[in-house]
Length: 249
Image (cartoon, rainbow, N blue to C red; front, side, top):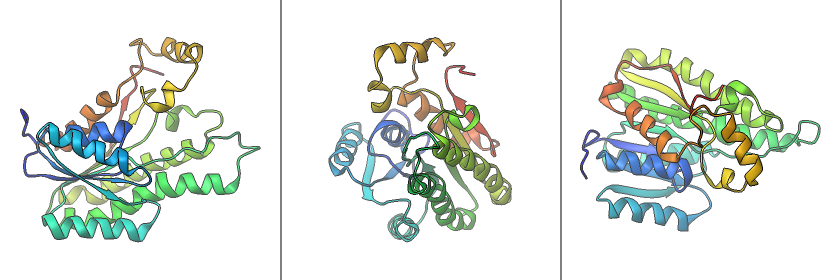
């Protein structure tokens, strides 16, 4: 690999088997980190990510873990610490969406999104905080969304979960800063992933019209910002929400 700025670091990326998570895992591995990424239901995609990173000369291993299961998160972090003796970077990317207008949304759809997107991120933060505080250094990076600030019809559950992630980020930055553990969030805008590719072309064109840079973002656009926040170069950045949205208001 040409870049070793994260050489010797151990990183956990949740939801790393595809989309933005896969791009983040590849980016961190490409910078020299040993990456452990979690997945839930698609082992084939997880193997593809492992293979892609290995072909680039990086180190990554997939681990099945549903972040909505607090005990599973604790177990995964314990396994990483047992094997690597340290954990330097944690990226909370795992998330689900169950969109519906509030008059039709079922309570269980609200609860499921909060359990994965918000409580899952909290569970990972809680599990990694102790080793990071002990080693007096670490990077926690949470994935938020443009909808946390803008809101979006049919996404009251998703927007609430991401707004909570941003509040969690700011609170933990204050809790952990004295031990040189930084906590930041990245809020992507409209990114070219499976979800946006399924949109009708007219709807996609309307989205692009709202973006000053005139295009959808790529998973790599998000991953490069995550990599910066994980690096020594971001050592004085904490409690921030970095918007990666092409200038979308």
